[in-house]
Image (cartoon, rainbow, N blue to C red; front, side):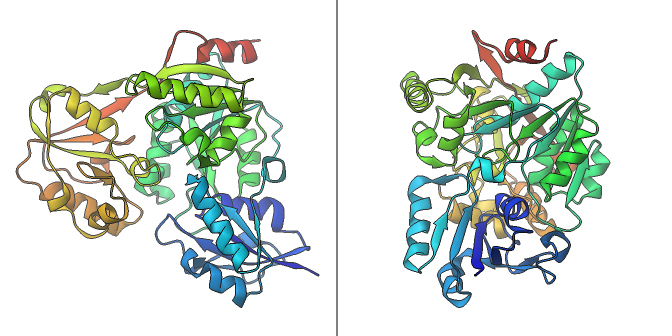
Length: 438
């Protein structure tokens, strides 16, 4: 008898697990997905074009709040938990709810869900969103490119629009961002690669994405999102840990899984963390994965035209997912404003719509604006929020993309940049040359 399955997700790992394990598997009948974290992805379908011949009508996606009811209504035997950046306690709370409703609770492992490439694969993952994975990925691409290698990056999925149309996406120019109708969150991940004249793929069907990328790559770079595990079997696994959030490396799912799988653990942000917390992270990592090589790192901040904000009253706009999923209260923009003696103005009196709602949903955010832009309406609300503040001198943009290309900011503004720098040895360049320098 077929087992009825429900997959809990957030438009990423859930679809991938379905595609690689359940799509053509006649032992299971996937009755539904549930969605959380990302707005506007519930109450729709995983399309028939992607669902395969066993699901000619596609598969419905419901809000996660209906989980217990759905288990009973659809006679669910197995619930697969398939999203990331969650505290261990929350994962077990979900498991308890599922078990109490009568279903089994699954966490699917690397061997069941990873795909194998014909090209070498380097994966860059993290303990938490906002740890510094993106600048680590960029540095690896730069090093390998300088060595004469063609590196193609593949990003963890962020499919917020038409899923069938987003099955395979390739980004090499700014026009590609418009072509694929990218949200601000997507542009924050893809645009830095485009600025380096690199190619990055994303989408929904990661088997097809991999095969397309292999045609133009010497080396595949898996740029993992949230703190998810790689979708591809990796020849080298780099994992970034964050000492500004000590103990998260052993208390978040699947961040701890990443730490245990890592070949190299980069303890980043050592310039903005205290020594005690750095040592806690180091000891925790060594305890669960003593074979991993630890790399110490910092993420120095660079500001364009710092005289614009020095000693001035400013609004600070930060990377949205770092503040929301990552649960951080500050980011690079805030640190830059403080470094240059700016007075940070509380943005909350000026917020509107979904930007205003974010401060209730994520109470750790206070003095900064999360650059949320999952829809045209939300982008408009972000623009209105920034421009509503009349008693400021400038805006500090701490996002990975230039927001001024997306919205009109009426006040003078500066961008903040941050890159990875290793402290002492080993360094990424030496490690990569030893592996690929022949």
